[in-house]
Length: 81
Image (tube, rainbow, N blue to C red; front, side):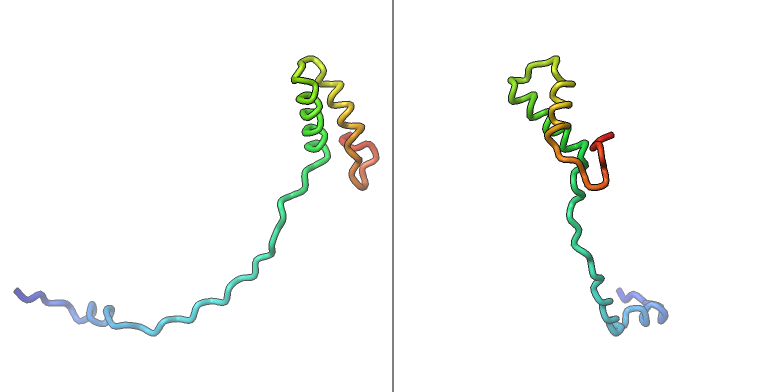
């Protein structure tokens, strides 16, 4: 059995010249954003909590101590405030 292919379809099957690939885009290497001071204080406060044996009821004390230990960021006089 012979199948007839319309002439329009025949031209669509012809190979075409390949287009050149576009030049690669330059991508700047980005580093992850630096932790904010508040994140550093939070992390240090949790570390103090763990060092104390995870004793509950002293979260404010841990936060205040961590706030004193973590240096302020440039342009920020009082740190997290």
